Amino acid sequence: MRHATSQLERPAHAPLATNVGPGAAADVRGSGRGRCGRRRGFTLIELLTVVSIILLLTAVTIPLAVPALAGRQKREAARELNSFIVGARSRARQTGRPVGIWLERYRDPANAMNVLDEMCLNVYYAEVPRPYAGDYVDSRIALVITGTDGSGRPLYEAQFFRTNPDGSSATRWIRSADSGLTGRLRIGDQIRVGNKGPKYTIIDAANQAQGVITSLVDIVVVDDLGQPMLETNVARDGSGNPARDSSGNLIPLPPVPFQFFLSPTKSAASPLQMPGDVVIDLNYSGEDGALPFVVRNDGSNNGFTGNPVYVGDTTPVVITFAPNGAIDRVYRSNTLGGGPPVLTGFTPQGAVHLLLGERERVPASDDQSRNNWHELSNYWVSIQPQTGMITTAEVYPTDEVDPNFGVPMSRTFAREGQSMGGR
Image (tube, rainbow, N blue to C red; front, side):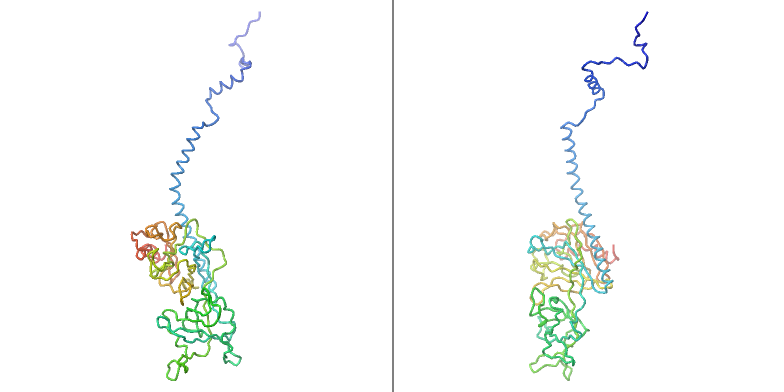
């Protein structure tokens, strides 16, 4: 007699009865979703909530991150400028001739007439050509006094000679063919006669355009500030007084060798470019105890007065270093002989300070509190003239609004760093 096997007596490996009807698959999926509670995506409301949170966090974070990024760019600019200056000093030591940095005033690439001479974005290397002594071994020069300048100092006309084979000079050699200097000699360059004594600065020329001398005649020079008069280079009579001709003009000595010291030229190498919105603010960069590199004639824009720099001046600022590492000359814009601004070299009277600031603060504002020398996140890169030592220091906080007093105060940390030997 066969008995039906109950469910309790079924072997463990025997399958359970399953629903094999048409709705079986749907029942399985439905029961699975109910048991696990899983969803395959976000609802629209949830997505909008997440996006809103991200936007809110971004809006809060960006204002906090921008100053940090700007500060990092300024620090990077200060470090790169420091290294660039060190490179110029090293190059001067290697070549035995002055090498420096060339601060190019900004010019709009889309409009060459739009010159923002108050800031520098690109810094180039500058090289000083070798002194020019003529195209011939017997090239000579003679200086004749033609008058005096406004300060009563004598003015000289340079006349070029090339001696004849017998050692004499003739008028046919005046205005001689020392053509190697044509197009290179500029107002502001210097001359030394007799290969000794002081250098004299060229202040005017009868044949010039935009400061470039186009002929080697009628070059008028004047002694450099603080140098003795060139009267020692004129002939003397029996009593030791300067000899004069029948018209009362001083008689020059026989033609002597000469040297022209030419202004620096910009290197063709790639420049150092200021990162981001960082600029070198030339409004307030300059030497201790001297006016800045850019000031207006009337002082209406930045409070400085007394420095004849033209508006829209494209003349660069050049700082050259001697082979021993010290500053050799600082070249800046100057007006000589009533002509256009020209590059003129000066011996620095104090430390040279370059202000790294923000582009949006240039041009200078009438509200001095908005200018770069007030912004505490900006930096002064300073160069000591006697040693060429370079320091970087933050802007010193000050409530002074007059730049004549406030800018020197802003350089307090920079001067302290120089006196302590660098930071």
